[in-house]
Length: 120
Image (cartoon, rainbow, N blue to C red; front, side):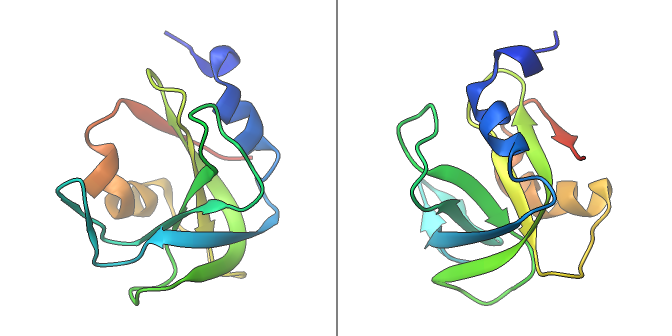
């Protein structure tokens, strides 16, 4: 089932693809939240409201140190097929990752959801 046309969060995320994005980290690398160890920095885009009522979510894949905020380029979107809660994939400027590298980085969390990686 193609849910791309039904996803409000995907439409929000598409506006950030290829752009520099600043995020606030609320689940730093190595922290535990709801029984899950975060194996990367996870946060949100300030001054946004996603369909879940929270800020638009983002994974930051360019540091294995806990951060409070990060800035980088949005290279992809994790589009959840059955949950309107898509995630930006942010990396340091000049860095690029393959879909397999992204998948490996986010599997700790996204293994629970049917999803696809969307790029420009």
